[in-house]
Image 1 (cartoon, rainbow, N blue to C red):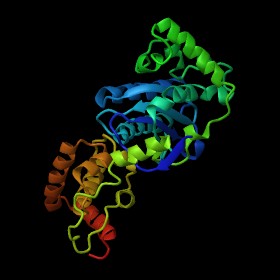
Image 2 (image 1 turned 120 degrees about the vertical axis):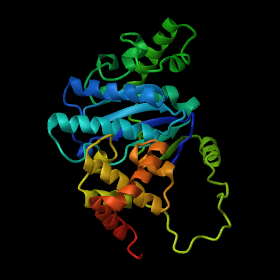
Image 3 (image 1 turned 90 degrees about the vertical axis):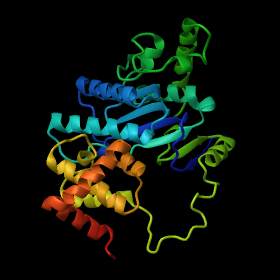
Image 4 (image 1 turned 180 degrees about the vertical axis):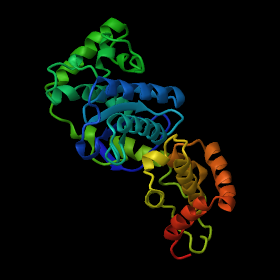
Length: 326
């Protein structure tokens, strides 16, 4: 029996079903160029932050990806991918505000049990939506790559096809039959859990995963006396304050933008975040910068506090509301 557990999980080698939707279910792909742009950005991130991609399906208002994590966090990969696409979309269609609905969802799945099932489930999305009668008729999924109807490109098909046969032709034949059989299956809610950070698998897998990520291990600082007034770092609260006082959205100040207001907002976030106890790694995950870049921006921000009045006022406003008792 499949079990699920809500937990923020990042494991090297983990299989993740990643889902993101348009804000208020709005359309995020309007024409063929939009789909291609998303795939181009996905390929770019796959080169920069290597991961295995076993399946994708781009629907008009949402996206499914099946990713095996390697060295880099899913969070970092998705932040760069979705920020890049949001900026492209808003420039192209002269939009402002959030294109995507909150944070993407990433469900850690038991690979040996769900790999082929999830590939099938993702590729059958257009059929379930009644867009096409057969999945190979849909252009914006990786299903056609499995059948040899288009180049494999960014999709890692071999680990999946090996489950179906020793030769490529036999594996494709059996894979096609496997997917066709899935058309008769009902919607499988387990594969599309509504909340972020779930673990999908047997109870043994869920328990082993929790143990692996150290939920049952004592913290390294257990037994230490806490600092007087120390509080847990609240990244979302800090992001909201940076947006409020800078007038720059999270998508903008966590982008690669180079103009002054964006850089100022980014550096203010890093400066206040470090004061609030956030690690360089945590701020790297928020901003999309490398750890080295976060450290460099922190040093630059400290220097600007002596000479840049706009920077000083912005940091003071954010800091006063983030630490109202100080």
